[in-house]
Every structure is written in structure tokens, then in C-alpha cells.
Length: 89
Image (cartoon, rainbow, N blue to C red; front, side, top):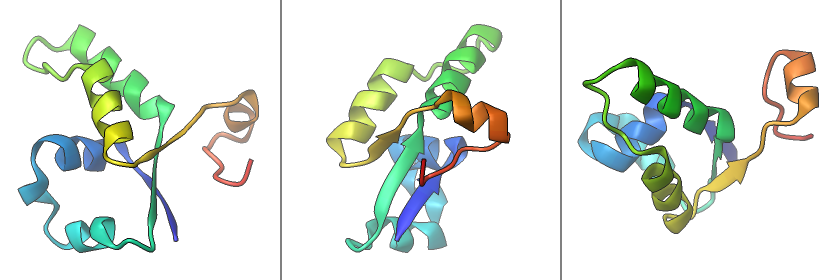
């Protein structure tokens, strides 16, 4: 199954895997394809600018996700027109 992970889940997976509890088993299933949106990286970059206490480096987060086998879903114009991210674009 292809799973699009939201920003909070990718942050927990990268920095606090113990917070995933039940979701951790799903993330570890080899049959699942883990996908994150480029929009999540934008969200991290914006939060980093707005909050002094938020110190996540979006470049390091992206590299870690790619190294761990997560697939990157680009944001296309058609996603904005539909108001959501579509996996089958």
C-alpha cells in the first residue's frame, strides 16, 4: 500500500520514533511504500523561520527520508487546483 505521510509523522519518524506507537508497525511493513510530500518540507522550512524553538533542518530531514527509502512526492500545479495532494497524478 502507498502511504502519504503527513508532516508530523515524518518528523516523529525522523526524530522521535518512540512517539509513533501503533503507526510504527505500519511504517515498518515492507509491503508499504512510504511517501512524503515536498509540501511537508516547505512546512518545516516556514516553521523554522517563524519559531526560534523549532530547529529542524529541512535539508537534513529530506536527506534522511531519502536515505531511509521514503519516496518524495512533488507538488504540481494540478494539486493546488484540486486543493489536495493526489498520489495518482
